Length: 183
Image (cartoon, rainbow, N blue to C red; front, side, top):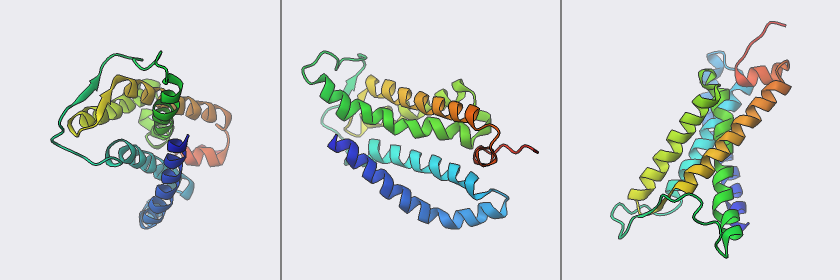
């Protein structure tokens, strides 16, 4: 649980820093007709991508000449170990939580990516790219990470769809997702 709390604290710090850095960009977007609430969706996507890259690549020192490459292509290899619950909480649950915002913000920011398969494809490409890169920088590459990241992205997409159904007639929601109806 300590690792999850550390990720949450880091996420909050990065969200605050990125929000402050985003202020000049918000002025430009405001001039282009993007409302503040719509800009929040851009900030959310940017922060989630930044946090994913930080947590998966930049959090541990990069070594382009590792002594060994670790690759696990057997799904759910960790299940059945004595420490499997602990491993789920420490390693797999953060992977799920890390990709929930990505699955949520992709369809919000990109109207053309609101289909499930499009959001899933982008999420898969991102997680596969990260695992591929990790293999070459001295970190482990694990099929379970791809699976858990995709589960997180799918959860985020489901949350988006549910909120979209619930708030479809709310102006603030339509402004957030970039849909403008005349009431």
